[in-house]
Structures are given as structure tokens and as C-alpha cells.
Image (cartoon, rainbow, N blue to C red; front, side):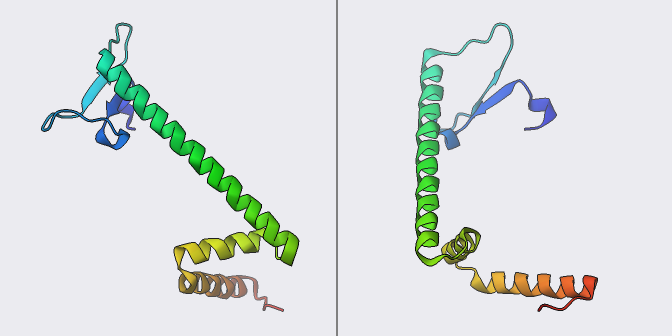
Length: 118
């Protein structure tokens, strides 16, 4: 949000708020006499409920991932950090990029420190 936008909220379609076709998103200036139509209040409250529900699902999924990583660590003793990196790389399907980044890191580190990997 830009400094000139402080005190203004933009309600958009991204928040699952719909307005008649062709009408622009509405801007509300917050001041001492701010007034919202009941319809607008309901739309905002509905959007907040949807956002909250989504955040709850995200938290639950993060807890699930933590539990799976813990179980893998307990069974195989692979560090959780390594397991998380494996999972992220698998999810993003970017193994080659990860290898290239690691190679670049290794090269730069050795160049800067004059130290070879053991």
C-alpha cells in the first residue's frame, strides 16, 4: 500500500466480493463519519470469514507437514532440515536448480575462503 493510500481500503474481486458488471471497485475513506451499507458490511464480513477459514486450513497443513517430518526423522534419523529440503525440492520439481545453486555456492565459498571441501 502506498503512503497516499493510507486510510483507504480497496475492496476487490480477489476478496470474493462482487459488484455489478462494469462497476469499479469501491474505495472507502476512513474518518470520523465512516459509513458502510449493510450489504457492504456483509460482503466484508463474508470475505473475512473466507480468509480466516483459508488460514485455518493452511495452519492445519503446516502442522501435518511437521508431523510427517518428525515421523520420518524418528524412523530414519535424517535431519528434519534435510527432509524439509527434500520435500520442498520434490514439490517444486526443481532438483536441477537446487544442484546448480549448491554448485555455485560451493564454488564461490571456495574462491573466497581458499578452502576446499573435505
